[in-house]
Length: 254
Image 1: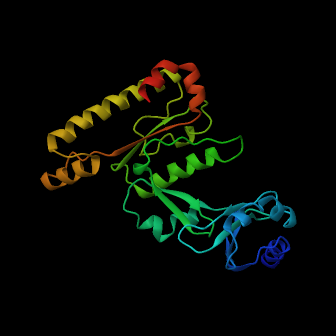
Image 2: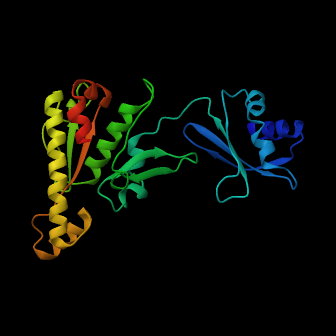
């Protein structure tokens, strides 16, 4: 198997190491190697191309060492990538028990464990990649995560889609603050409104002596439970196209 082939390949280059654990993920398999005493980790790292050739792999990644472990990780792409269904992530305890209303079911890691992150902790996200790499899938996963996790009163969405084809399907959902924006000039107006709303909220936070939305809503809840503010998530598809049409207004607002 690949593990024994990996050990033999390293041995042929004078590196003695034992495969101690194998983690099979959706796209790659990670082999955890424990080098023998006296073996330099850098020597294993320098053999990346030779290991890839002997394993007939397009490319490999060497993590030397694996953070928190006395082992070297060699990641080899699987012959066929497994499809990670969003339901598999949404049904995990990591997602269901996540405290944030903006929990994002991102996918699975090298070991096949669910990765759930918080959009509130990364408020400015740029999703980039080549054609067909999964940008749209990522955006749709983000939107679905919010819809599943938050009530319409807890999170509102502003969607801007200059090409009209990607986000228009969401028209009519209760989480939308306004219908999906497809006109570049209206998009600039929506972003300008968001800037004004942000400044208004800063004033409201200051009036209550709090620093963020969570603190503000906690104060409001103690007072009367009315007037709590929702999170607002702005999603722009094909930002480059929007910048070309209305560069000045869009750039200033962002």
